[in-house]
Amino acid sequence: MSNIRHIVAVASGKGGVGKSTVSVNLAIALAQRGNSVGLLDADIYGPSQGTLLGLPAGTRPDVQNDLLLPVEAHGVRCMSMSFVTSERTPAIWRGPMASGAMQQLLTQTDWGSLDFLIVDMPPGTGDIQLTLAQRVPLAGAVIVTTPQDVALLDARKGIEMFRRVEVPVLGVIENMSTHICSKCGHEEAIFGAGGGSSVAMDYETKLLAQLPLNLELRMASDQGRPLLQTSPDGDISQRFSDAAAAVVAQIDAQTQSAPVINIFDD
Image (cartoon, rainbow, N blue to C red; front, side, top):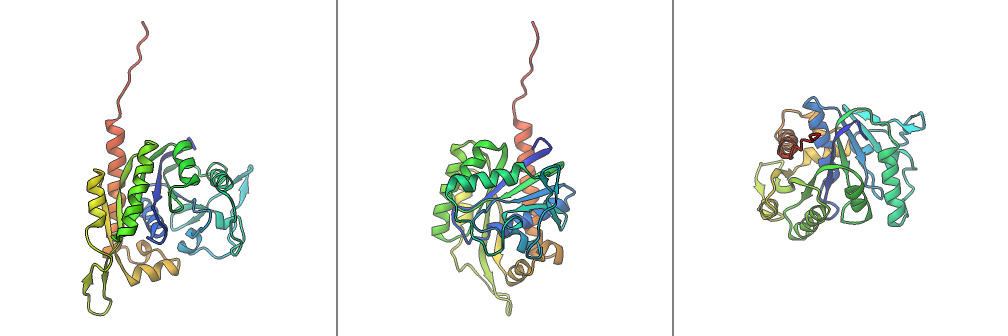
């Protein structure tokens, strides 16, 4: 853990908003900026990073000196619950057991030296989120939401949770901001408009990106071929790259604004 410079949680108040897709593309965007990056799939009940990274079913990590070695894909070191369990075996665990599993994946993996570790959190504000926030030195959290009122309500709860445990909220990513027709290019805000920016403004944080509901992104995710690899110059890839740059800038600003305490001997 001491060799990891910054740990960033990617969280959402509710499921189905695209948090895992954002996590993997944010990790790759950071790696493409020259950083050494790890990705922890902490969604114990629904791990998906193996699929999103295109790793075959049954992928298992090697073990060295009693530590798990992360699986590398697309320039990112990844560890997931799906690497140590059967693909069809559900994690029917109570909160403390799930939190313990997350801690083991985090602390018993030989991450090596990392500039960033992106943690793909489970949705909600339960035991795993609290355990991570209280026991891991998080540089900050990124909140993923859609513009829909129900998602925004839960996104606010997520921000409130991180604030209560004194974890900085680095910003909000609004996914499915609009739908762009693949035939005619018409763009429509089918889930509402302005929700992500409203939440960011209310909590005095950044709106890091607005991502459209896009067929190419969905297909790339299902095929395990992240869009930043298959279409690095595309509009959505650029939005992920801009979001990664904004996350780095936010963390750098926090580091520079931290007080310096000089201790002198009398």
